[in-house]
Length: 461
Image 1 (cartoon, one colour):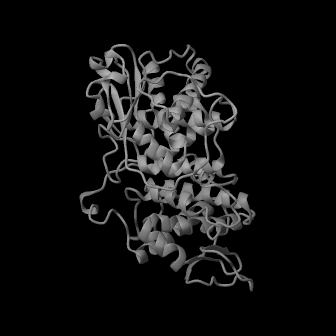
Image 2: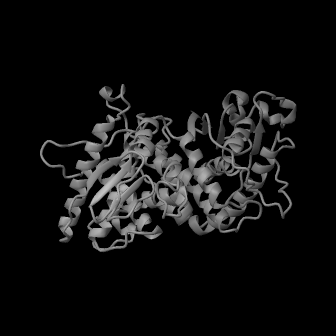
Image 3: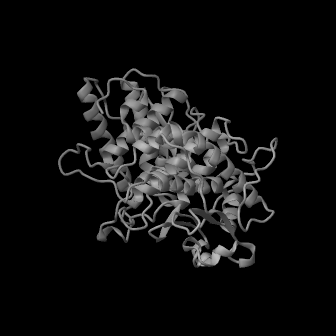
């Protein structure tokens, strides 16, 4: 979410969204709707969705908060507010709306936003623009607006236990709390909500709309993180639960949101198409040669081979799809017209690097005498591509001579966009049978943890 602080005690969220709707309904049809009170709510799908999400959020934190923080969870005292900025009537709300610190300039503050506010006269509140959440629901399905509310509820958790003064840490921790709740919902534990694998992909797609603008200061007063930062926080909570959210969000947490240098702003940091392949070739070769030399494995750098339409045969056998690793020829091949050129033009240079890094990682698995076919091999390859990307981002690729390059703002986001939007196509990774959510999670684990997360023994991280 593009959240902006209106005051020290108010966290607001705003964005412009595009996307494709998923008609799947995240609200269970076999149980009665919650009757939780939302001030200003109307008889519509959005308020029904939020009411049920809030009921499940209160149940989740009622269970988890004592286990994680060793004290009971105190419910929000000020309540919840639904607002249509285009059709606002104060009569629909309690009289206190006129003098509550959290509800001052309500229409202006909530328009295009959702926010949590700690210091209300009657206690803390969550307020949301229901027209915004309706747009989210139409564009990305029912779980994205629920996640927005779960993020704000994460701020309510912080309001009870404290959080970092560094905005980007606080915001991604709230993403983590939202992910922890979503993971719980995915176990079929929630009374009102459920979520299926396709909805998780819609959710990850929607998160791109909430990232900070590429190249902005990660320590700004309204910084919330890159697409990778926000997705990583969410998936960490989804996978590892609220204890990980409590423990892993300190001021020294590493983020991929970085500022542009002044001379980069005209190009947004993108290399030309031809230079992109030169960078991929030199960086992948230098990284994996260094890694495998340290393990005593004989590694021959594969050749990068572009094609247009018909893939080159491998050991006499035709190949289908847009990217391949051929052990017999020791080549990594890619369809320029169908994949890499559109990736460069539509997403950016690092999406191209990522498309090459995955089959390149299969060549590494081959050198290690590991299987290179099937879903587990693809999972390991995506994870290893995450480790390579992390090393690249840290500036630790051992380039030879004067041949150097570096990660630029937005590059890691481009990898995530490629994984969730393109890598799920059967033409790209036909043997994977993995969702975009899973692919991004494998990449995240390699990026954050290193090779130990990739199911490959003997590599020095």
